Amino acid sequence: MPSPQLYIIDYLLHGDPRSFIIRLEKIDNAEAWHWASCDAGIGIIPKFGREKIRKVSRPMAERYGITDVSWRLSGSKPSQAIGDTSVTG
Image 1 (cartoon, rainbow, N blue to C red):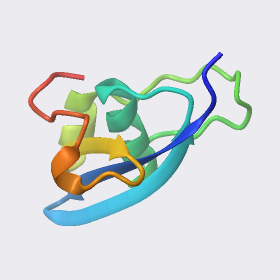
Image 2 (image 1 turned 90 degrees about the vertical axis):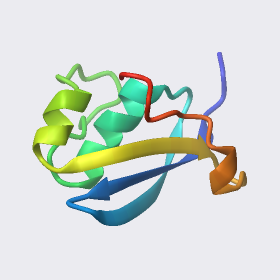
Image 3 (image 1 turned 90 degrees about the horizontal axis):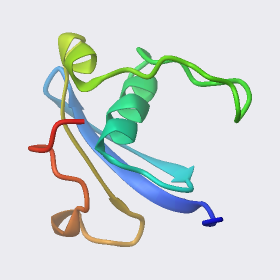
């Protein structure tokens, strides 16, 4: 079982840059879009780790003004982003 790591998620909310750090075992573009939505106040953060919630998709997040979501491992430079905003998530 992988141990949780720190990731930095960068995004734009109505054109304003936002960034935050999150601890997750794994991340992909879909997870990054969902957690960016949570940070922006749109998505629901589960109360318990195993609670099943409906995740916010990229199209839904874009309707609320979230764009350019990217993510990277904490400690890496922004130009070394692992996530690619051109990939649908």
